[in-house]
Image (tube, rainbow, N blue to C red; front, side):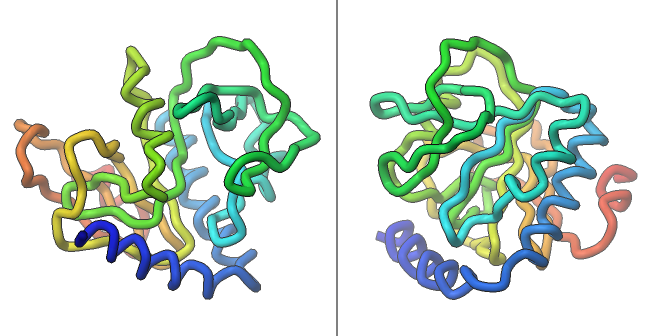
Length: 204
């Protein structure tokens, strides 16, 4: 119930940020781009956004330089990776998708939308489980970055074991970094909150 209540309350907050959010989108993109360069990611999964989610597609021309950009494609109750190509067609849940493809590739980085993130850095999404099943099916672990249009970090543990864990959480106001733990299976991990340059994180 805690998770459901948190999801509902944060979605209400998100829907108040639909208009005039280009500046916030750019701020999120700028921080993501720093991490893309830092980790030398070449194959990157982004997403086609709902109206209240950060729209990285605005900056796809910059992302496309020397990189391959992919988006999720809904398939049954999970996702598959497809190349980002226009045109996009409106599909289930109002999400726009490119045409299906049978491309098989490994991604270096996944930039994933969230409704919120809890204190053990697990994702609170829309409750459908698409991303959870997708990442569970992978035989490798790409770097996962959570992004959002508002700061919805919870100091409480709200998630379950199957919820995916990220390394970074970025919104227009703050950025969070999950510190490595000797025992990631524990229900307690540490994190750092920043509103300044990433160099403070990478120098730790």
